[in-house]
Image (cartoon, rainbow, N blue to C red; front, side, top):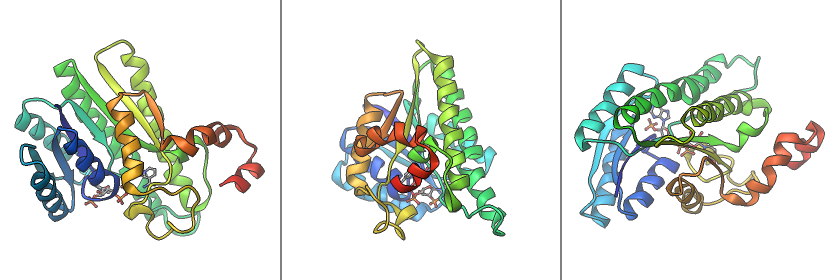
Length: 248
Ligand SMILES: NC(=O)c1ccc[n+]([C@@H]2O[C@H](COP(=O)([O-])OP(=O)(O)OC[C@H]3O[C@@H](n4cnc5c(N)ncnc54)[C@H](OP(=O)(O)O)[C@@H]3O)[C@@H](O)[C@H]2O)c1
C-alpha cells in the first residue's frame, strides 16, 4: 500500500487512475479545480473500499504557490507521499497565427510550466524522503511536431517528456524513480468531440488500465495502450512528413 497524489483527478484519466489505484489498495491525495467532482469521486471510491483514505484539495496548477502548498499539505496529511502523478492538462490549442494566442499560451502554461512547478514540488518531497516515484502524463504527440490545433500541445508534451528524461538521467541508480507515459487516444472529456473521428481510440477504463500497469511496474517510459502505439512510435518519430500525414 502506498500514497499517491494525482493532479487533474476531477475527470478523465486522472479520475479513472484514482478508481483503479484505490481498487489496488493505495491511498489517494486528489486535486483539481472542480472540487465537487472530487467529492463525488471520493464518495464513490470509499463506498467501494471503505478502508481507503482519500484526501482532497482544490488546486489550480497554474498558481505556483498553491502547487507547493497543496503538495506539502498532502505530504503532512499522510506523513509521506510515495508517488506523484503530474496529470493535469489541457488540449485547447489553435493553429498558430489565427488569433488564439490566448488558448495556445494557456495550453503551454498548464501543460508545461505548471508541470515544472508540480515536478519541483514533488521532487522537493522525494529528495527529503530519499524515495518516491514521479509520473509524468505525456502523449504520443510528443514524438513529432503536430499540425494545427495540436502544434503547441505537442510541443508542450515533447518538453514534458524531456523534463522526465533529464530527471531519469540525473537519478539513474538512485531510489527516486521517474516514469514518462506516452498516451495514445484514450476517451476523456478532452477528446469527447472527436472520439468518433480519430483512429485507435480506446475506452477510459482500458487505456487507464495500461497506464496503471506501466506505473506500478515503475517503467522509465511506456506507450499506452501498448498496441498500436509501441509499433507506431518509431514511425511517428522518423517517417517523412507526407507519409506521417497519411498515417495519422
Ligand atoms: N485522453 C487522451 O487521449 C490523452 C492522450 C495523451 C495525453 N493525455 C493527457 O492526459 C492528461 C489528462 O487528460 P484527460 O484526457 O483526462 O482530459 P480531461 O478529462 O479534460 O481532464 C483534464 C484534467 O486536468 C485538470 N486541469 C486542467 N487544467 C487545470 C488547472 N489549471 N489546474 C488544475 N487542474 C487542471 C482538470 O481538472 P479541473 O478542470 O477540475 O481543474 C481535469 O481533471 C492530460 O495531461 C492530457 O494531456 C490525454
